[in-house]
Image (cartoon, rainbow, N blue to C red; front, top):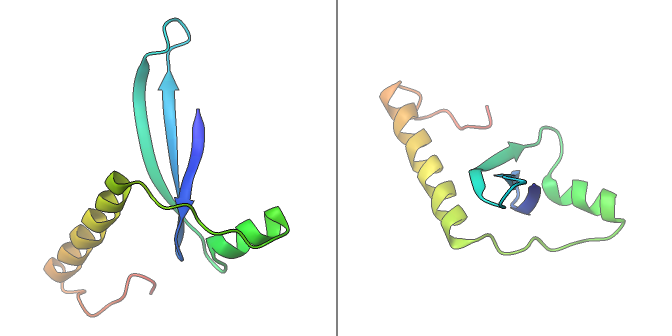
Amino acid sequence: RTRLLGWDDRAFYLEARFVSLRDGFVCALLRFRQHLLGTSPERVVQHLCQRRAEPPELPADLQHWISYNEASSQLLRMESGLSDVTKDQ
């Protein structure tokens, strides 16, 4: 089962659940970010829905995950000497 959790100015955030057909047990839960090149999630949603749509508020745990990823990426860039390079380059 896959669902769209929301989006921000750079990416869509999705969740995939692997659920047992036998008893409904959630065997695995994946959350992932899908970046877009050359456009924005807002523009994609507007095109698909034929109207402007506001993104839903992202769950608190997902917001923490996003913050962690940004901090981790910044540390890795600093360690590799790329601290002046933005992640969009």
